[in-house]
Length: 339
Image (cartoon, rainbow, N blue to C red; front, side):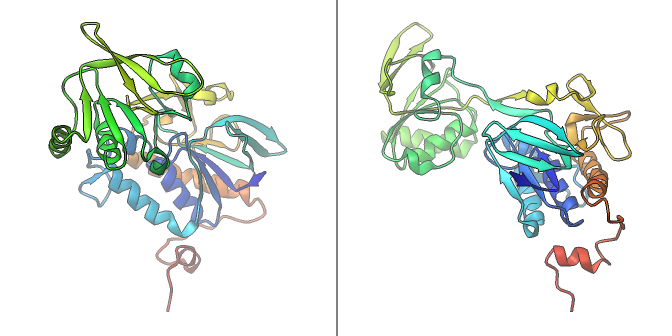
């Protein structure tokens, strides 16, 4: 059982800023996210797309914003639980018992839902025969690229993720890149590199093809792909990687008895608490009159929710608002030395 002051569901920009607001108040947080890394929508949907509405930052990318938020919360040594989803919650004597799909158990007086528009799940290859190989030979994300060294890898997809991993794995493995269209969606430099590797035989490209079937048996040895004319080709492969983007799902949150409006969670604007005491919603997933779906708005919501979290986590302490510029206590938590 992991005990913590706050459980944050979602490691996007708003969830990361919530860590900061809790941290400067002396509260501990554990962050749970269904993705394999922090950043949420910013990283998965538009890592390089310019963002223009962050105060004092004229322009940044989703990646650079995430990197700076992580740098900001580094002093708090927060525990992150990636590739994991909150499956069940149960109230117990003013606290929440939280269980994940990996059977981790948490106990906390506060839950902050900062899940954007829900959890992200990969779009999977439409072949039933591949399901039994998932996590062994079929993957939709990469955690440790060393596991793919000296293998025969078939990569499906035509976007940045598929192209970047094709280039990366071509250095250590035999790669076949398969896409249902003749055109790829990637940066010009990436496409140029891909063409060079194709010419030298470092990467085999099959277009326009889609997966048709996989071999039977307990070990993946080959797949069949089919083009628009019905032509079928067999490819020997040890590993299949699929990069088709993400599906946004609200998941088990929809079953927690929260007041909801069109897949968003209703909150009050005093502290962004839901109808369940100790459960808060911030960012794109929350709903209230005048709500604007901006990262800026989510930062404001995180700041106010953190105050109520403090009151619930420290019921015997009086919350005292202090400016970070004048509070030695806050500066100490941030690792700032005062001479």
